Amino acid sequence: MNITHYVGIKFSNSGKSYYFGTDVPDIKIGQKVVAESVRGMQVGEATTIPEPISKYKSELELKPVIRIATEDDLLIYDENIKRAKEAMRIAMTEINNLGLEMRPIDAEYALDGTKLTIAYVADDRVDFRELLKVLAYRFHCRIELRQIGPRDKAKFVGGIGICGLPLCCSTFLVNSEGISINRAKNQMLSLNIPKLSGHCGKLICCLLYEDDAYTELKKDFPRIGDQFEQDGVSFKVTAINVLSRVVKLESEDDVRFIDLKDLKEYRSKFRK
Image (tube, rainbow, N blue to C red; front, side, top):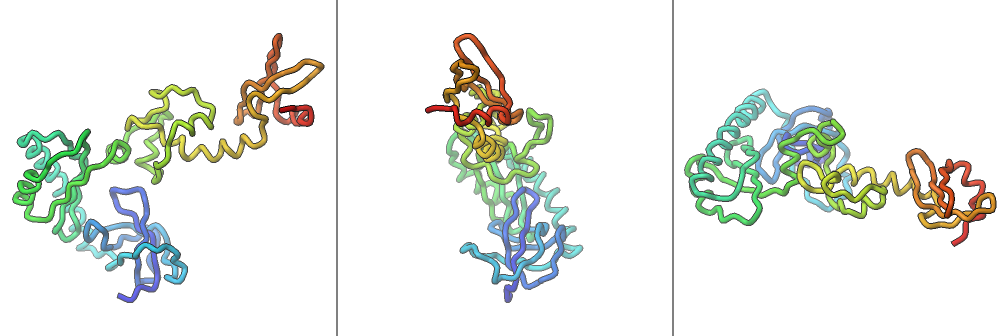
């Protein structure tokens, strides 16, 4: 194949798009294609229009889009989904028979049926060599057992978040790295870990994508602890609300809530 363009492709078990090379310049967004992925041939959906390969800046190798998905490809794809559900049932039975401390949560066949990938969760490392032998005998194809973390499990299983909406990780959020308690501190949240934790038991993902907005909004505000004199009384900044844009000032005998717009008139009176 003479790759002339690259295009974003998303697979059914991932909310993230990956770039693939293609020689078809007119693939449309939403169109089903067959691509060669690390899990074998897979049916995916185009999420971008093809761009000339000259614009591709990454050093990652582009695997190819093999073809636009045919009617036969889509029929096989649908059949593989049914086969994968049965594979999950069989895998769970064999895991129980072997007494292994692991739980399969997703299975996926490559389009040509030559590989079955089973994702599982486990608290510790699992010796699944005997399980691999059993499953290979049952399914007559290559078997990959892939351990995933609690965040990925929540993404697979789905659910409703504390906001009342479907989980971000199972709908649109693709990057959940670097979520630390420092982000909660930056957003001035009460450090109540249970309330800040999601279905996965880890810190909620919205701490990640809201953090930059809080950092930008706080640039207009004085720092906590800054001193301010108003009406001859010395006040200290004890809290700020970046959403309502209000600053809380406290003195020995008084507490005031001042709109940031009004407070800016006195910024020159702040002292370190």
